Image (cartoon, rainbow, N blue to C red; front, side, top):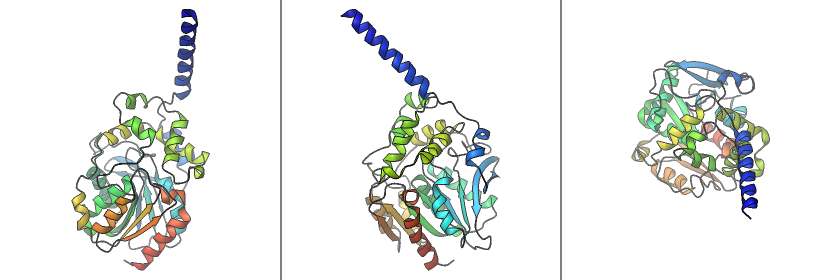
Length: 319
């Protein structure tokens, strides 16, 4: 009996060793990722000595370009569908936020390790300065939505319109937290995840934020997986999640006077739809549109249907 238990224990150890070996995913230098994820019209600009990945498309005559900000774990590619529809008529700029995509962690003149909301908001204002844009419209999803409203409240004179897509900002209790986010917040495990990253874990995380998980393609999983491996991104994600303070400065939301569109997925289990109603109630005149069959990233899950609402909103509120 003891021999059989020892044999079983040895087999389990062997399987565990194989699993660790297969899950090993070291950081990748940004240069190794450019060929697939920085094809034209990708470009890089320097913002306070930080190299920032962006795409700037559409007519330069647009008096108030639209700046789009992605959410946690995502990248500027999440807006592909919206940009394809908007760029014939609007200038649309999208960036990889520090700690994500090809931009990588805060560096240069920015304090390393500071991933608080207002730090990101001030970075966005620096991006506008670097692009020599005195005014813009701004939109964002999840974390990007929070950064957007924070930037508007810090410098209201710089923004014409605001688009919030399943944005964070108020205290909330998630119905479900993606497993990748849970691991990144646990001391010890988050450091281990900087060296091990099973692709199936990334796939499960992405599928959990879709209203219909069957819409998640292999190419989409590849994108999230490979860009998570960009050197420093996993460490930055752990820092960002440890610094979360949902509800911090939420009182500033009531000061927003810009025309605002609140767009939400009815199947969002991460930031419940009740938060959409709070934004709509606190921002005078805000327009609320809910898509009952979509999840936390409705712009990515069904870009054609959601961007139609955005196009109408932008057209009805000319700068």
